[in-house]
Length: 122
Image (tube, rainbow, N blue to C red; front, side, top):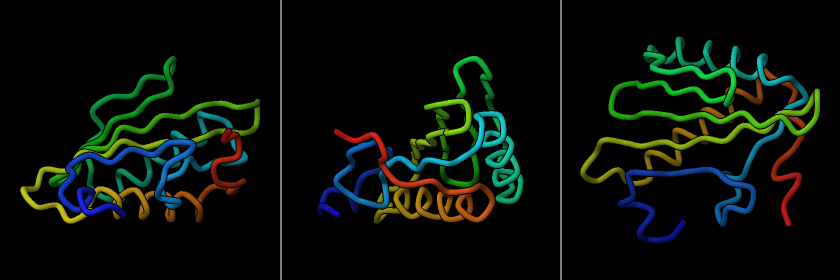
């Protein structure tokens, strides 16, 4: 992690992220199943689901001191990539957004059949 990341309020996952734990995760499920699993995780965290778009496969939820935007990308009929954008509300977050993403992925890995990390990187 770079020094400036300790003071960043925004973390986003991507296919080729320089932090290995923030690379896109792929699951052997359909988009709808991944969205339902994330909804249950949001409820478990006492978060408020603000927005769900089934056409664009996005979901936004807010918990205390942070907000999460999740994007579900269907690679094939049975493979879905899940990416997150986390925005924290702290003066000195000390990488809290990264920790939240890692926790979300860890919990999703226990619920959904994990296929791999960054499978379609260039």
